[in-house]
Image 1 (spheres, rainbow, N blue to C red):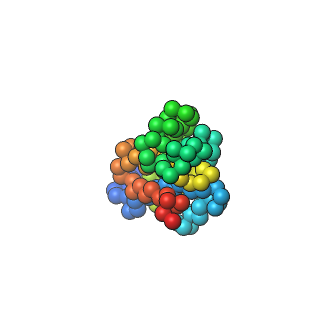
Image 2: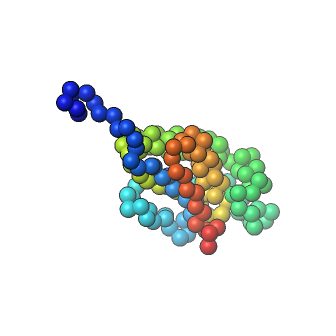
Image 3: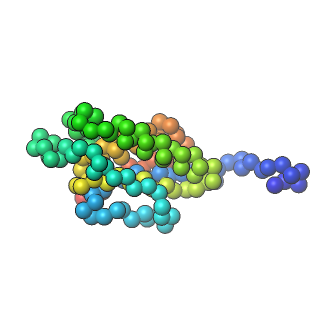
Length: 145
């Protein structure tokens, strides 16, 4: 508050929000949040039909068009992502207002190769398009090994 009892509005955000979006394999466990904040989101993609069960997709990843097509045509991935985007967007709005500096969003599946990778790519694109003031980092823990 100022002396005139008016609300002070911060002139510049001193910190930029970074949203780290990770794909992972549940076989290795939920990723550690190195920011020290803890919290964030963990979404379980095992509810989606698994392209990894079919030979033609085994050597592909969630970044491949064939896997994208499989998920769009053989699972409810669009509805799943609509819901996750809504939840994450709500937190991003609040985190920006509160000058928080980090939010962790994790997508896990059995192997960390298909479903979770696809969901990370979609979420990262959503965040970049809707929150240009936010730093978005996409990481694929299994693909980076």
